[in-house]
Image 1 (tube, rainbow, N blue to C red):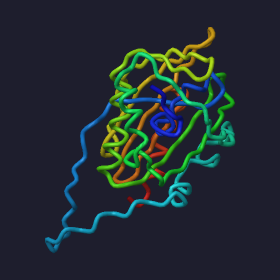
Image 2 (image 1 turned 135 degrees about the vertical axis):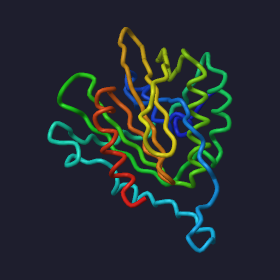
Image 3 (image 1 turned 120 degrees about the vertical axis):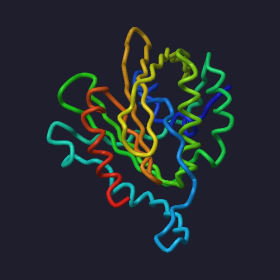
Length: 231
């Protein structure tokens, strides 16, 4: 079974191709499910559902160098890869890959920024923001992350490159409405990389911060504060 990088893997920011020269990534464990009940106003009437933010609005809520400090340099976004990616040894991901071509996981309202930190070799940090209804965000991201968590180890093949992937669930901070967090270990050609991703849903905005574990921990709350301003 083959997965296009524009479906499940790009959505969850997989770091699989960090070692193969393409992209970087993540996975996670789902937190409490959100309620789909509309909020009630003081007059007893149901308040209108919030309108998802546009991609332009999300871009303004991304972290920038002023938020992170002088040791961080913003890196240009890599062009989307067009090669197919084959998953070996994880039936849940294979099954999800077929479903991920549908619009329920597309999340067209999105923005992303990536940074390099000057303080070490494992020095990448990436932030992704998505906006949709709370129910759609929860369902879409939860399905992807749960599938990844279900497979402690598997392989990802891109062209002639075979990447061994290991997953380990980690505790997410008690922030936002829902939360996920995971460590992923990527091994290929004698190289090894550890990536952490923590995802937090705040209302109709989903924040994903991935990269070197220490950088994720240090900057997660900054990302949440800026992304959730006014929500």
